[in-house]
Image (cartoon, rainbow, N blue to C red; front, side, top):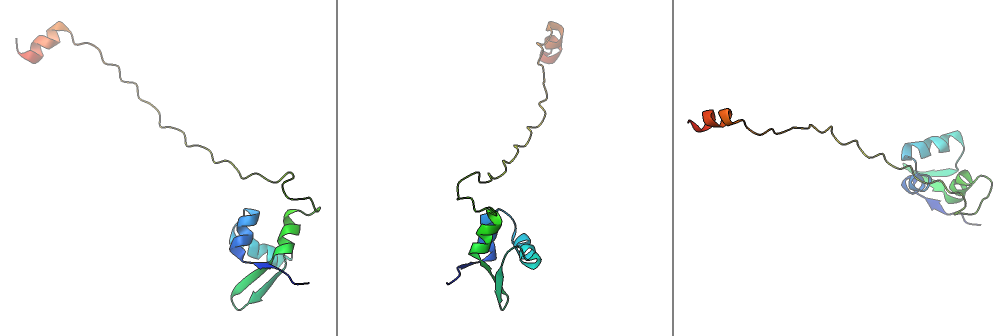
Length: 95
């Protein structure tokens, strides 16, 4: 039985975590991997078992990615324009 291997980046995208977290899971023994030189190849079946520990089929109660919060709009400054008084208009025009 041949094993399928994926990269740390692919495993990270599958689990929605960082590559560093995948490396930590390998060190802790949660996920099986093989190192060839500097490259870490992750066993695909161990990633699936880690994500679905009870053997649930894909698509059933899968985690949804977190929704990003929209930034709050800057506070609005209300500027009220008032009509110019007749005496002020006379000073501005020069009458």
